[in-house]
Image 1: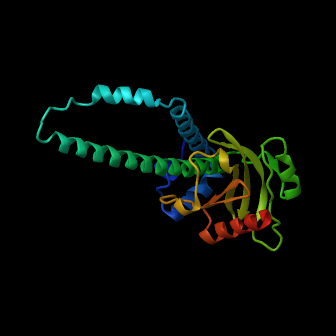
Image 2 (image 1 turned 180 degrees about the horizontal axis):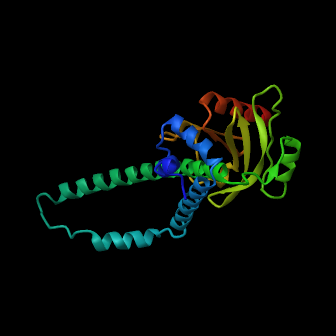
Length: 250
């Protein structure tokens, strides 16, 4: 049974609605409580199953057109004002199309960050967060060869506060990627690496603004790969780990 003191916070934690300090406290609790960890994992798996189910069918343009024709009200004839209604209709449809395109791109981008958050939370709640357990980058990096369709570099952590815990394969939009887990002052940070051209929608730096997340996130594109660093550590730690990766990949 989930701890009563935390049960009410599970949903808010997964949706990124908890204050920063409560997020950190809950994340620490999940890593030590089997019942809460199981509940978190179950909810994350349900969310991802729903997301996948929602992408299995996309209505065609022809189907959309036929539905719109069926539900569209029949216009009344008016010789004097007909051209005004026609012009207004064109304006409304144009604005609506532009708005729906913007909302679609924004919601798609937000969904990427939501899925990245779910992957990170699932690793925190898992009893086996990594498939290859090692602090040696020369052990972890070769483990991915043949498992993912790209190569990447891991930074040298000497003279830094970070330590590598290991890595595992992961999937975003059903595309394989690498998931590395690092530790800094008892905070677990996830680094995700995917092929840039495999992500939908495309992410551009000038349009990225992951807001309303209870975790700190940094993302960038480099060498055809998309990197995400996420965790409940402070923004400075997230940025420092990101800089180590940027330097190693340059």
